[in-house]
Image (tube, rainbow, N blue to C red; front, side):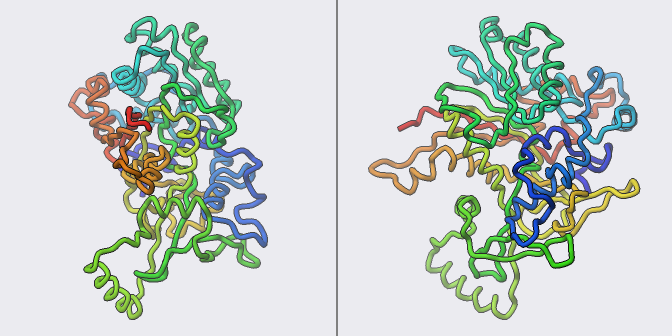
Length: 446
């Protein structure tokens, strides 16, 4: 089943055009699983979602929905009236998904702008990067907010850069932002893949902000497997079964650098144990031989890759990310397992095996925000300091906070603007399975 707030929209509920930008055609194989060549699970996920010929999003490449005007929530009686209004919008626009920034414009983006304005160093020109800018609504609304609420110098000198791999979406963003002529001198689109370090050019030590709104949920993940409670973790690879379009799993010792590093960050292979733990492990080893219980863990290697790139290119960046923190009724095994769903004859089918995703199903991951925090610290260099502390205790170079979306909106936004007549507030009530992650640099630099 889809997350609770998804019931009011078509089952796919994915930002097809927004997320299909991420991986250029050269990165894909000619099919979901190539012949005679095993691939890592992250490459399978990438191909199943984004392959230009077979991928789920490529087959559903219609534009992300853009509302003609803001929803006037204070004119709606309550939840039922809101759901009916939303249903009419989806039928009118014939799209799969309106992003929260679109449904709640301008208030959703205004809250993000307010959080930036409250904490930014205004003595230097404000620079904002947005990864996954969709139709440009977030960019326009943030620029609107700065024009209306920031000191004139902040708006006049700021730069807003959208990192966008789709030329058609880049054009749409320029059109949206260009509705206010003065915004155009502050806004640019760079058509490139955000994970490619070369695209960022030389390291820029100046402060800036990076926005990633609902980007992490469809990034490629890897999978590791252990046959019992004590055996070492192994990488999962996919190879094609003879005479079948579907692949099967192959297990190999950890060797891929990205997978090995992600395993280390998660701590699932931790070897430092106490005497009591050693006795417990010994007992567990005996039990595992009699009652073996296979283990699986999904690893956000796509997230690790992009954060690595960002920290290398923009070491003084402040980051705001938002995404789904959990997904209910996931039937696929493993920690942080995805929801894999397809739609047939108007009905949603949740798959129990991720290998059934052959370009006709979405693969949608929850974000473990505490793991995201560990990855962020690792990419900033904190873990390297821990291993080589020298004479001083290592100090974190990032200050981070994780907030439920409702808490973020109540702190930085205007919740009254999205409340209906009877007090129901879809922004606060229907997005309980989403969170915001804020990460800013400290002055603890060596």
